[in-house]
Image 1 (tube, rainbow over the protein chains, first blue to last red):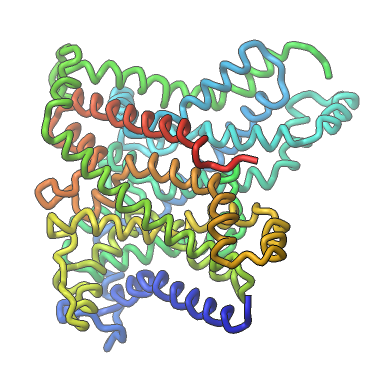
Image 2 (cartoon, helix red, strand yellow):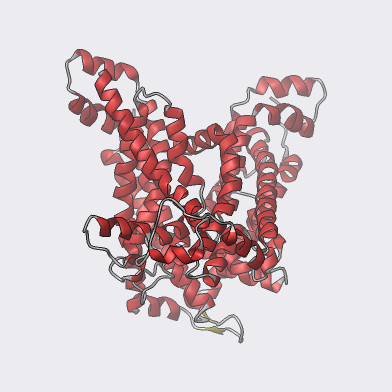
Length: 270
Length: 290
């Protein structure tokens, strides 16, 4: 590629990035624009920026609680999926038992069933148990993911068996081999699985929408949708809510960016 | 390797994942089949109606409309993200300064939740005082009613969705581009092949496995589209952008027809399964394998 072409390409890529980033910038700009001046049409430079929208936001919704819910649910789902997934991955990669193929096929088959098929009966189930509208209802269904099991089984199979055999000779049992030898060696796969689990929980909307009624158990996507219903025309408040819900995940992304992108591209290279 | 049977250990290691999967996937799946045979509003006692729900859905005009809208969404969305994602991947596969930074930037919308994406675009595409129409007005272009106009509602959802997923497609295709052996390009260069010929005869054919993955995933996810539609249009105006999952939600929680909703969810599953199987079968004709 010639030098001139590279410059042209760089300009195009930069322009594209500006366009792609613009909705984020616009969200922030709108959130600090005084409510009255939004109706006059959009302006890029805010004349007298204000935090009124954020005050209204925090006054009308239990925002801190909602943010804490989102983080808590996402962390719990991620931790559970890592524990349940790596244990199952170990069983499928390292243990000999009858019906292993059938059980593994059964795990993979659950990936075929979309959430929409499950959402109505699942709601009825939680209602029967009187557990609807609780945090538990948000966490329990995401305690295990067959996709996570699949990723972690792959990773454990790639760990050389000589390592566990040496440990077996030293008298270590499966629990110790699993926890002290296998787990530390599959850290990259754990990171990938964990990030995918965290993002799925953080963004989940349909299930919380169905199962949660009380404002104090809402997660961010649900809280934002409620907010929009309340402040249909007050876009400054709606955008303030959007900013508040982008910031935590953007911070995680800032630090884990390499792992996130590696994790996603990994899912494409089966 | 000991040839011992580890059944007890296997049970211990599998139980933590098997119990939730059985309880929250298998059991609801079976009860979904049962519910689809009932007439039930979730409150009064259910009545067994056999296959009546399926029969009614298959003849109802609403079913054809929501499947048509969903298909329209997929057909509008897929070329947009694929071509856009491919152009981005090609650009960012070239040796550019700060390309890691650009990749991270283009990927940012992917980590943003659908609800936020939908709200931000609903505001950008606000017909009266949104930014997009202000710009269109300034250059003298027509200003559509976007999500308030039945003819534009689905297009608004497609634009927002494509913006969010462009970075995802880019990352998948970048990984595909990087797995193409460099010596093929070297050979093409020695043979004096033009950049265009190299693209059509090396890059695109060898990218087909990644393309296939993008198409399969996009179709599976596309047929299940819900969040952004619910937030941006609520399926409106007058059902113009109602999609299958939105209809499942409304049937259950608005119209109290849970049986019909369960039946519709199985129809959706059948469609997704059929589309995926056809692609798996058809891939032999166009996906490159080495």
